[in-house]
Amino acid sequence: MAQMSLCRAVGVLCASAMAFSLLAYPAHAEDLTSAKSRADTAAYRAQTDYNNATTALEAANAQVRMTESRVEYARSVLSQAQAEWAKATEVEAHKTAELFEADQALAKAKIMVAQGQAKIEVQKAHINAYARSIVQDSMPLISVAVLLTAESTADLANRVQWSDTVLVTNQVDLDKLRTIQLELDAAELTCTEAQHAADLAKQEAQAHVASALSAQQAAQAAEDALEAALIESQVVRDYAAQVQADTRTTLDQAKNAQHAINTKIADEKRKAEDARKAEEARKAEEAKNAQNNTNTSNSGAPSTPPITSGNLSPAEAQSAAYGMMAAYGWQNTTQFQCLVNLWNRESNWRWWAENPSSGAYGIPQSLPASKMASAGADYRTNAVTQISWGLTYIKNRYTTPCGAWSFWQTKHWY
Image 1 (spheres, rainbow, N blue to C red):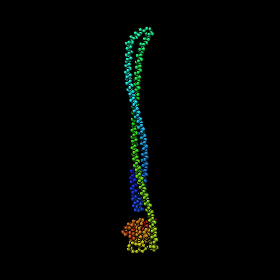
Image 2 (image 1 turned 90 degrees about the vertical axis):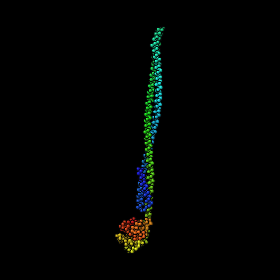
Image 3 (image 1 turned 60 degrees about the horizontal axis):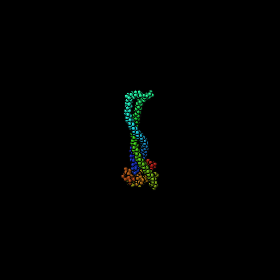
Image 4 (image 1 turned 120 degrees about the vertical axis):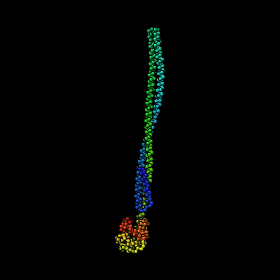
């Protein structure tokens, strides 16, 4: 649409240039009328193009505003995604640290369990060896000696209880070692479970980081696309603004041309009206002065003098015209007075008469004078040549002098 507007603008500029050229060289009223029509058309088209360009600019501005809003929203989404990714990355780092600590704790626990188990095994071996040495090797002898040397029944009972206590003590020591073993196993299991939980937490954190990164990348891609769309819409808006400015210039030029044409037409009409009034006043004055020589309505047709020269007086010119009427098929009794009235108003039958405003010349007031050259090369000085051309013009255009006179009475030209 913008290119169409520019093409139209070029057409408007051409039309404006044509209107200016017509203003510079107005030949006739028809030329001014045609120039006015073209100027009006150019102004209308320029106004239409300007309206279209304004509408296009408004639409482009609306598109820019909408795209800017979408870009702002995309930026906020991208900012949130970046914050989520940063937070997820921080959590991942924390979970990685926790997993590292859990791994170290588990490793230490395993070392402690291994060391504790080794010590337990050594201690158990010592206890078992000691118990075996007492029970299997020494205990029977000690027991017999103890029992034989007992001084009384009560002493014997005490000695028997001592033997049992030695055996029970060995068993208690072994039970304590088993308890420690269980505690070490439990500690190792706890560390293993903590390490496993820390590993799962790290995996979840890594998954969250990957998801946040994907969301960030999608948001970044969306923001980049909208930024590109915004730049494109801004270019379109700037172009639409330039087209509107160009069409505004063209519209101003077209309106100026239109105004100039209208002013010229008004001036021409005023000048024509002033010239008409001045001509009517002049002709009325001359008609009054020549009334006795030109009024033939009561005395019949004027006599026809010998035609020996074209430089005739007004009365002689009338006589010459009277003699030429029959050649055009007109009867003097019905048509001659109309011719007298017509050319009285136009030139008062003076072959040298010239309209200072329009340049019309001669008895028939030919415009331009050169048209009468078709009747003779001496059209500027020969009254007969002028009358011949004038009668032919009336015949071709109005058929009869009375037809021309009737038209003149309405228009004041013929």
